[in-house]
Length: 112
Image (cartoon, rainbow, N blue to C red):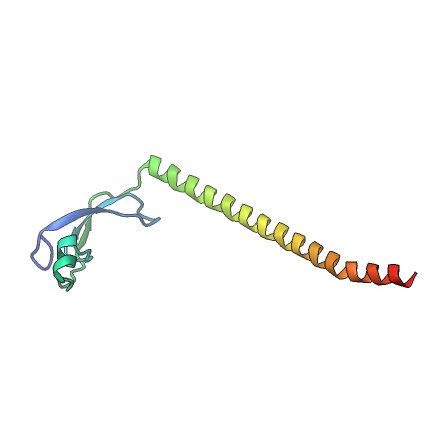
């Protein structure tokens, strides 16, 4: 039971510091209406209770490795995005120079 007297539920953390650790939390803490509540228009959330008690106190080694891999993949993705952005900017600049050069070359040909 939590502070408000309702039964608790087990949830799993997705935060980096506590990734995949289980904890007890009040069922009223987060409101996610069921399809029936939406259908009948009962969208008033219950009163919030901030009870939470950790079941797991350490992140498992496999979860730590997974988080490290995720960080590595994200860094690689950001590096690829930045490289692509720089390549696109260089290509755009090259095309703009070529667009500016063409009229000048045409004028020179006409003047000859």
